[in-house]
Image 1: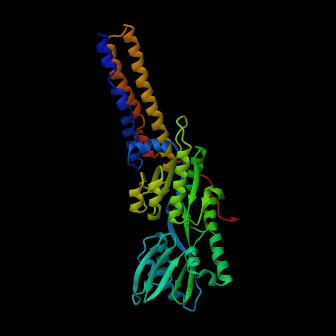
Image 2 (image 1 turned 60 degrees about the vertical axis):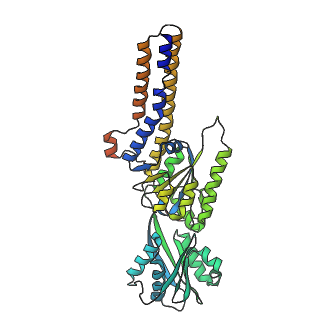
Image 3 (image 1 turned 90 degrees about the horizontal axis):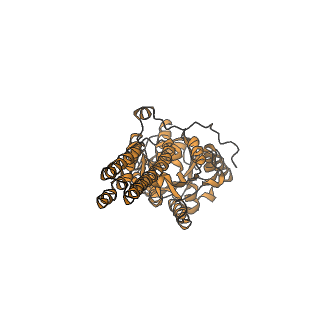
Length: 399
């Protein structure tokens, strides 16, 4: 009889089911909130996140640009330079391109049909280049034109204007035409997401370090950082896509070197939305893509926020920690239950029915414990995951 009882107690049903049922319940809970997670392992990883790197454009900001300033700095008319600019931006998919075309349309400037555009090329982290009627034309940031040697040819007045636009938080761009140098300069602005500051504050309260990665000039990046509650040390500006990859790779490597069996894991999360973010997303321990972002970013990420609501990051970290805690509870309960019954069996005080009831009972209890992660229908209807709002600040007095 003791042998039969031992065989029943040795059945690992409760132990085996304790983790999968928790994963399934948590994945279902996340899906009900509009969060698509590609596997249960990422749920556990989210619970151990200690550092989050955010892309700026389209992630911390809405990615909806507006053309704020435009000036022609050559002998060409404002309308003519705008036509070249809209023609260059017309094949591009970046939100900044749409803002420029829309801003030009407000001045009754349309994409010209009499100019020939060829060899349109994306310059990662810098801008775009193309041939218009046989002349090489560049559109991009200051880094591009410093590399080309054109930026220093601008007058001091125009360079001061560019710096002023950057200090105000705008994204500054320039356009050059072969043989003429820089012919125009412009500034576009992007609105910070309403929830960004409150989400950053909530994540910091949970002991998570926050970094912002952007290719913008330092003054513009600091301006956005101030609005969402980040210090200058937490803002990494003027980064190329490969710089973002290097930052994430270094952060992941440092955490791996510091990992000890008696210490909890310190995972690095990357949150982005663009094609340029995809390599960094692929390297992070956990990666999150915005649902409104590029398809490549969603493909490279482990998690997708379908409605691009950053408040769900707070819910995700909470859910990840609950998953870890629930799995530990289930495994511990399963092992302790079997140890107790085994002890009674060896003492000759356990019956076969007691062993069966304890085994089945333990399996049912760990299943119910895992299913507690499922939200009630009322919470789903009310979308009960919002964090408290935090007062916004402007970009004045950013150094």
